Amino acid sequence: MLSFIALALLAYALPIECQNLLKHKLNIIILAGQSNMAGRGGVANETSTGIGTWDGVVPPQCQPNPSIFRLSADLAWVKAREPIHADIDARKTDGVGPGMSFANAVLTKDPNFGVVGLVPCAVGGTTISQWQKGEFLYEQLVKRADMAQQSGGVYRAMLWYQGEADTVNEEDVELYKGRLKTFFDNLSSDLHAPLLPIFQVILASGEGPYVEEVREAQLNIGLPNVKCVDAKGLPLEPDDLHLTTQAQVRLGEMLADAYLRFKPRSLQSNNVPTPCSNFVPFFIITAQFLWIILT
Image (cartoon, rainbow, N blue to C red; front, side):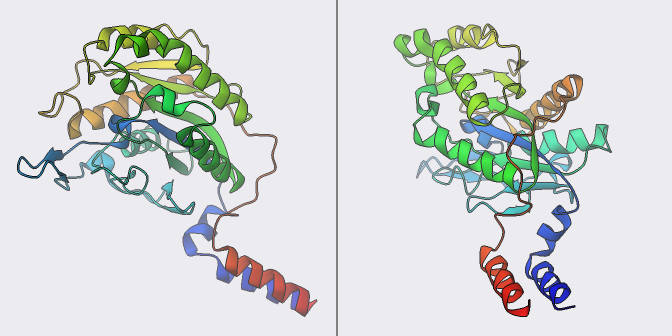
C-alpha cells in the first residue's frame, strides 16, 4: 500500500504533458543547420535599426498540434509552436521554419504515425566547419539528441538545411563536401544510429557567389542514408537569402513527402531509454526519497 502511494506521488509530480508522453514512444526528428532551418519566414529587418522583427503570422499548416512536441533549450518536452527555434537560435529573430509544416504533414498523411518530438538545433549564419565533431554546435546537437532518445524517443530522421554561409570563399567551397560527409558520418556514429535517415535540403540561395558549387557538393554527397530535397525556386524574402513563410510551408511538405516515401524503421540506440528522465528531476528525487521512507 505504501509503495503504491509513493508511485502515485511520483506520477502526480510529473507535468501533465510528460505523463501523456509516458504513454507513447516519441518519434524524434532532429532539425539542424542554419537560418533557413531555424526559420526566417515572416522576418523583416527594420531599415532604421537593422533588427529583425517577425510578423507573427502562423499558417494553418504550422499551427500547434497536441501530437507535436519540441525539446526546449533547457531540455524539457513542451508543446511545439512557432517559432520553434526561438530559444535555440536565440541571438537572432526567428520566424516560421519547415519543422512544424513537416510534422503536421506527416501526421495528416499518416494518422497512425504517433507523437512527434522535434529537436531544434539550428543556428543562423553557421558554416559547416562549425558543425564538426568537437565544436560547440556538434556537441550540443549530440547532447540534445541523446536526451530526447533517453526520455523515451526513437530516432526517425534528421532534417538538415545548411550551406549558405559556405558560398562566400573558394577554399570553403573546395572543402565543403569532405566536411559535410565527415559531419554526417560522425553524427550517425555518435548517435549509435548508423542508418539514421538524413534529409538534406539543397540550397535555394547563398551569402556569396558559389551557390551552384555548394549545391553540386550537396547533391553528390554519395551517402546511402542521405536523401536530397531541392529548395531551388522556392520564394525568397526581400533579402534574397531566406525563404518566405509560404516557401517554408512548402519545404516542410516536401520534406514530409520524402520522409514518408523512405519510411524508415526504428533506429533506436542500444541505450535503454528512461522515460521523461529530463523532466523536473527535483520531483523525481523527492518521490524516490518518499519511496525509501515509506518502504
